[in-house]
Amino acid sequence: MNKFRDIKLLSVNNEKSLIDDAYIILQNNLGKNYIDFDSFWFYVKNNQVLVSINKKEIVGVLIIELTTQENFFNKYNIKGNVNNCRILNIQTIAVKYYKQGIGTALINYCISNYSKYVNIIFTPLWKSISGTNASRLFQKFGFIPFTIINNFWYKDSLGKEGYCPICGSPCTCSVVIYYKVVN
Ligand SMILES: CC(C)(COP(=O)(O)OP(=O)(O)OC[C@H]1O[C@@H](n2cnc3c(N)ncnc32)[C@H](O)[C@@H]1OP(=O)(O)O)[C@@H](O)C(=O)NCCC(=O)NCCS
Image (cartoon, rainbow, N blue to C red; front, side, top):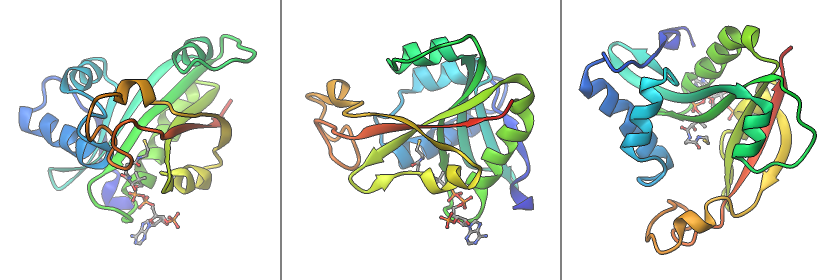
């Protein structure tokens, strides 16, 4: 795992090719329509994109959001008691080379560096007919399921052929939100 410990925030001052490489990892893993470049650029500008670099090559990407539980619940339309605790939302994670510890190193970095600022870490994970991606990885760190949102991308995917890399269009995948209390 040590070789993937070079993890940093991507910045608008980084070379364009580096930013493109990070974007391509997301597209290759999560589908071409998962995130458009303008949204990705917005996350870069807002210091929300962490990358794992090995010998100058980007090998993993993670998008984070520091927010409140209330905002997070509103964003995902979750009903329930809200208080104003601070949360870290690990929105997305994707790696270039599987099963080499890159994902583990990225999550480890997040927990070590952001736990002091938040009370809970949430992560919405993509659940398709093939299973819930990354659930084993997050469970290893003590994350547990919080709620499931069925047909999460259904409306967005209508009429967009090839929207989802698993079910196409319409997309009937769900999101399972996992969480871990850190403070
Ligand atoms: C989910 C994802 C990020 C995991 O990343 P990863 O870098 O492969 O994860 P790790 O290598 O840290 O751990 C995965 C497994 O590899 C094992 N592993 C870690 N280092 C290893 C090594 N050097 N040799 C062999 N196996 C290793 C881990 O023990 C773990 O095993 P487990 O499945 O039994 O728990 C990656 O699979 C991915 O990009 N998926 C597509 C995108 C996605 O679905 N993202 C989540 C939804 S938003």
